[in-house]
Image (cartoon, rainbow, N blue to C red; front, side):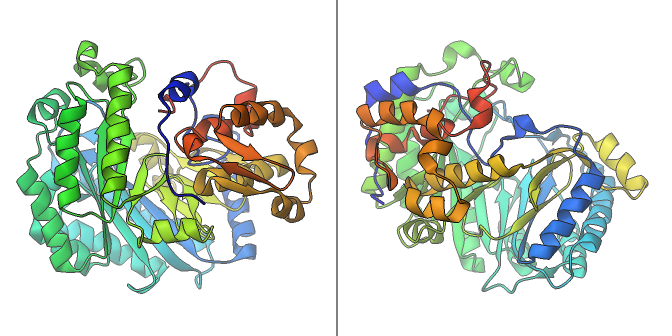
Length: 460
């Protein structure tokens, strides 16, 4: 795979429509309440038959202050005691989930997300990890990938030391933008000094990977101002970077109404920010992994992509495709057996389920045969920009052209526009198509072909 990207402004403008990010296929908009806790337990039985390692995701929803751009599931409070009953329920859920899975299945991945996971105290962090280890068999530090999302405003060097002591070896830091005017507009005042102090502490504590998250398209951003932030980020040499496109949807997310729409950069400015960001990062030696992600060539993500072992799940790109994912906490999404499931979305409903010793499954989706075929195709395209049609036909027992006949007119258009090449043996996404990989995947998405209304953000 040619690990590069070509920025073709005309093509991007033509193809810049709404589309899924494909952290799953089918996407979460297809989840329904016909999928229950009983459905989930049947899928766990299927998962145990297949055996293999597991991944755990914990959602810790609390934040001290609200960032106006945020579209995550969070609870804003300054009262730290609000975490106590939630953690007690989370401990219950851990026990209920662990009882369903074969005890010899190894946890190779673990991730705390939010919200702000470091909202909870050091003792609460230690206890949560102790309870997890009591009920699940975690891989050792060398083989396990244990990550946490950290807000540098909610973590000092002592916090980072504690996280390393209890088993975390990967750190993801939210930065978004260092420009003080932008920070004030989005209600996230975060100094360079406190951010870099956390990075220094992580390196001193022996974290083996540090990832930073940025957002482009925020109020008052310009290509020059964002380039300044990026220069400062490159100077501290993170292993991975995410440069997300901010999706301004105030009709869906009330908190975004706190920002003035007139202060948002125009689409052509956003595109210039993106183009310059790609140029800066690739010039600094980072590999464009796909979507919004960049990594050093020696990083596990880049190596997995080169070896055709990269995978995508609800946390983004991953190197553990063989792991079923167990979601824990409110709104968490799991992927077990041939299904996706999502937990209750409010503290009240979550607590009510666990008080009855019931799994807090709110909704989900059971994949049919067609879903699984399309998931393979979409996942490999979005991870590797390449599809071996001959291998897919043998693996899935299909005639590719006949099965996906409705996609071929779109493939021909993509080819005419220089996004990809294809023949009877393969599809190869060209550098001009890397930024538009979501559009290419949509050609194979059964559900999106049936819809006229799009519930997604723009692809660029």
